[in-house]
Image (cartoon, helix red, strand yellow):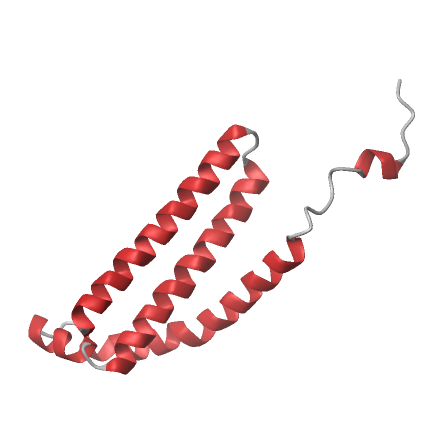
Length: 123
């Protein structure tokens, strides 16, 4: 039988010195998404269902292209951080590290593909 104090049992299980920064990053990105998602809906809504040429001309303008790009970037970054928290809570060991790497790569890959598509339309 081991006689450990509560403090001794908790040593090594606490903060990894990045919890506060991660928390604030999630809060800032969620507030940014509160602004960007309605802007994206209001810029995307009127063009929905229009012919292909009209959509290309519309997203060649700077404001809709910038709003769409910012929404993609912030949204996928927020997704990656949220998925990381989910994985850290429910998966442990080597699989945790593998899944975090895969989710991060998926998020950055999808964001890069979206930005490439917007740049291709806008330029």
